[in-house]
Image (cartoon, rainbow, N blue to C red; front, top):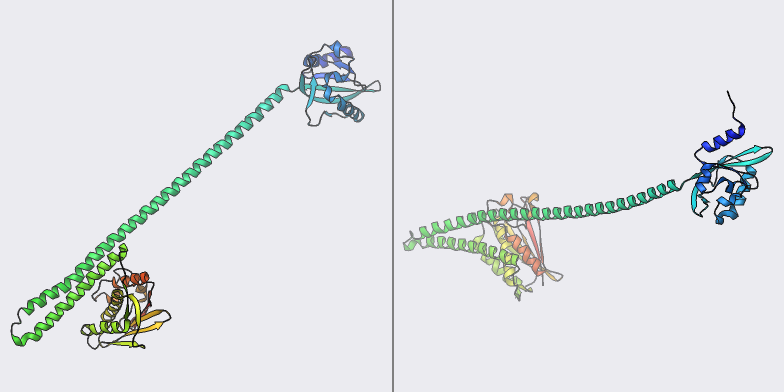
Amino acid sequence: MSKLPQKNIFSIVSESISEGLIVVNSKQEIIIVNSMLTSMFGYDKKELVGAELNKLIPTKFHGKHGGHFNHYYETSTKRKMAGGRQLWGIKKDGTQIPVKIGLNPFKYSDETYIVALVIDVTESLEAEKKIIQLNEQLEVKIKQRTAELQQSVTQLEKEISKRKEIEKQITKALEKEKELNDLKSEFLTLVSHEFKTPLSNILISSTLISKYKLAEQQANRERHIQGIQKKIHYLTGILNDFLSIEKLEKGNVKYDKTLFDSIYYSQKIIDEFEISLKQGQAIIFDHQESVLNINTDIKTFDLILTNLITNAIKYSPNDTTITVSLHLEENNLNLTVKDNGYGIPEADQKHVFSRYFRGKNGSLAEGTGIGLNIIKKHLENLGGNIQFSSKVNQGTTFNVNIPL
């Protein structure tokens, strides 16, 4: 096998590599360069060989480069130069180019030389910059898209919330409409029942009266006349209750406060109930004062006491006692109506003041189920209140407080 001279081998090897090659001695003098390096920096080999290494380094780095070179020359290890810092070279025309440099020391004739492999990284830096710019643009777009998406989500959430609120309002409206329809049906049924029976009794009594023509039959005539009067009074009360509800709902109730003796007026109302009592029933009127003046609406007071006594009679059996009490309690008049009747079942007690409600054990008695509802509303308007306690088959007590 033929052998090439060592000089030619070094030349061939140095020219065959793709990086720029430069060899310098301890004085930072350039000894050897290959064609790739001269092409990279725009020089001829003759211009670089024998020249100082600083010829290829920008002027602003000359001061620090000498110290870096001497330190490396003393340690003489294989490594990449700069340790992550960006290195710069300067071309013949003064253009600065970014470079990466790999350093390799070697000894020849007892002298150490440094071989540097130089790569122009202009294109890769431009690519990195472009990638960084693209990443930044991508981040901006992602932020914009995220913000737009968040805005859409927020808008959608608001729309969903708004629709849920609308659905809620519609549901409430439908429930209210159903409630009104139920009340209307219940009202019509109630009116039909409550008016039909008294009117039938009035018709029967009026027919029978016409048959009692003899003088000795006067007692029978008076009995039927009283029955007619009682039913008419009952129907008038129902109509007054319905009118009171309408006025209360519309807020058209006007109270005419008058100073009157509540004991005298209560006794008068109690006396009127004597003809309405069941067999063996009695009303006891309990009061400590002989005169007890109060300043309130007398019609409302009449309505309250009349309604409570009516209920006590209606929901109590024969041979029972009803007690009406009046006494002062601080700045209020305390009115109590106590019976020993059927009582209100515990399950029904929470509905007592609801409109049209009637307890299961009182469903056979006459009534509209609106009296207590009306009383409660009137008392609230006057600043008073009503409470009750009740036990089945032991009776019920209603306590009313009216401001003096």
